[in-house]
Amino acid sequence: MKPFTGILGGGIAGLSLAALLGQAGHAVTVYEAGAPGGKLSRLDVGGLEFSTGPSLFTFPGVWRRFLSVLNETDALNLQPLPGGLGTHHTPFGAVPLPVAEGHPLHGDWQRYVRAVGPLTTHLETLLTTPPRLGSAAFIRASAAVGKVLGPHLSAEGWIRAQRFPPPLAHALRAQALNAGLSPQDAPALYALLPALIAAQVFRPAGGMGALLAELLRLCAARGVTVRAGTPVLSLDARRATIQLEGEAMQHDLIVSALDPARLAVLRGLPTRSGPRTVSGLALYAAFEHELNLPATTVLTPGSYRDFRAALHARALPPDTLALIHADGRRLALLLSVPATGQPMDPEQPWVRAQIHRVERALGVPGLLQQATAVRTLDPAHYAWLGTPGGAIYGRANPLWRAGPVHPQPYRIGARLWQVGTAVHPGGGIPAILGGALIVARLLDGGLLGRGLLGEQA
Ligand SMILES: Cc1cc2nc3c(=O)[nH]c(=O)nc-3n(C[C@H](O)[C@H](O)[C@H](O)COP(=O)(O)OP(=O)(O)OC[C@H]3O[C@@H](n4cnc5c(N)ncnc54)[C@H](O)[C@@H]3O)c2cc1C
Image (cartoon, rainbow, N blue to C red; front, side, top):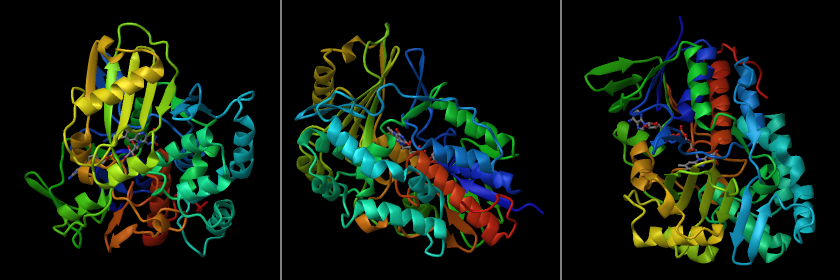
């Protein structure tokens, strides 16, 4: 008989795992409180469709490994994003990442890429392999990464030790935000990311929403039931039973794709407070005419020390990291803000000041005022999706926990497993897909002894 598996949460994590377990012969139901996709959803702004949440598709090799386990070909038609990670406006000047030939920083950039670039395959292995000391693939990949990281624990420590010119160092530090943390608090691994991804940033030809549509198709093709608008109210882990509005559902196995804090609440357990990753204020603006702007622009905080101090105090930093994407008549602006879970809007003085800063850097004063419609997603929205204070990547882990050798809290009860952002350091699309691959293989080969998903990479 097929194991009946319930997955809590229908974001990228829940849906990707559902497709894998469907492939392995489970009868899967995904319980989703709102609409499938979670942070990745479709939003209508002034008659234009926007995809919310992730904007950069990196480490496409992980997506390909995911598809190969499903025996599927790639339907996303991933397109390189013009300008890669974009121009980074730092207090020392503008730095495009990757740094093009002929730019005064090109020599330093080349030195950096030569040291780090060969790690791409090893990183893919770490993203898709359980961190086990008995695994030769894991040991090989960790040793290669460890050799480049040296004794440095934080991104700040590693970047400082390379003695890059200040503009390049300042721009590289901004990428620590891939961990949702300031460079002093982000693991050293994040200092390597620009070298690995700057020229490898993609987006599906049909926009990020195409990833959601594809995950739903992969689920449907494997008989997965996705119950949208179905919040899970409580969970009895021992019986693998969940309480929904008006009915209880019993399963052979439950996998939570929720933040551990929300899972704890559902189990009636106490939640731990502690440091959090950043939240975001995302503004999606529609315009009447095409915007003649670069695809991606990044404004770094003026001072990472001030930025960090503010985040620790859960206060607004004097100036924050801003990520701007322009695409035809669409503009998306993401501001990093502390994870307070509070509502925010474009009329607040701090937000207006950040918008003016962005408009100055883009050379278009009053740009946002020309928008025909603007919609905002704020920390209150992200908190509703399930992370404390709307922290994009949940709790902040200590430095030693977020590198290659991290604990593996995949199985947290005899019939309860977990997957997703808090289990797999990094939290973005590659970490989530890789994490789903890891959990599916452990469940398939280990717990159930079926081995339908093939050998571990
Ligand atoms: C503004 C922004 C920009 C980002 N940019 C990038 C990027 O460029 N590249 C990248 O790789 N990543 C990026 N990320 C991160 C990426 O979007 C997320 O890591 C990813 O979408 C998280 O997926 P998830 O499935 O783990 O969580 P979620 O998407 O949060 O899904 C959790 C789901 O659980 C549901 N849920 C909660 N409680 C219950 C309950 N009680 N019962 C049932 N369901 C419940 C929620 O409704 C939600 O749908 C970005 C995120 C944000 C917010």
